[in-house]
Amino acid sequence: MFTGIVEHLGVVSSILELDMTESGGGGWSLTISESAPILGDCHIGDSISVNGCCLTVTEFDDHSFKVGLAPETLSRTNLGELKVGDNVDLERAVNGHVRFGGHFVQGHVDETATIVSRTIDGNSLRLLFQLPEPTLERPSLLPYLIPKGFVAIDGASLTLTSVDDAQRTLGVMLVAHTQSKIVLAAKPLGARVNIEVDMVGKYVEKAVQASLGGVDAGSGIGISALIERAVENILEKKGLGGK
Image 1: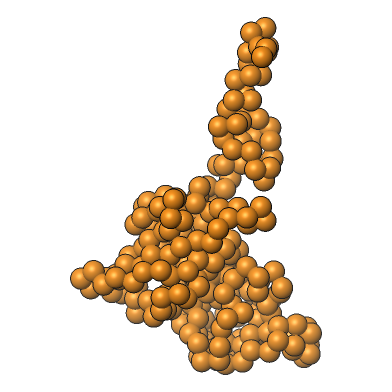
Image 2: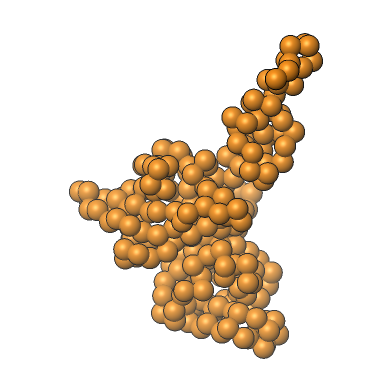
């Protein structure tokens, strides 16, 4: 579990698509250097959020650490687009005595979005992102996004300033301090970012759907259909049903 408060900017120093070392495990590995500030209490097996993706440390020294990237991680995130020399947002998993300045972030990226607008507003930066067209495998995230709600973008906990369901867009504003602390401020138009929506919204949706119709939340049946079904059930019990 993370808070979305980025602790440090690391630098990608190695990318191996086939790492046959013991710590690489015969898969894709990523080594991140210039990370000493977050490695003082590091252990093998620890979780570190890298651009919002919860990854497991397989090797480390005083200044760098290695993580593996599974096929699911590569397909769901922008980590496969990283190049040696790129900066990445880093955050260690929270412990019990940390101030919770952001929101509950799992490090389980839901989808990527594309930067479609960058606008300077005083000393702040407004960014607008567009989500991809939803599919059966990847339903829309828009039901979980509301103005002034939480979203994690590349691992940074940010407040939504706008949500447009028709255009599939969401907007945020970065104050001057935040711009200097996260990778997002330097990303150009067209860049992809990792999006994780607030998990509380997912639990609420599933609970509401279950209470209205006992239907699994992933069935694709909308709230209006569930309400209609619930009303029909009530009418039938009262003997008022029928077509």
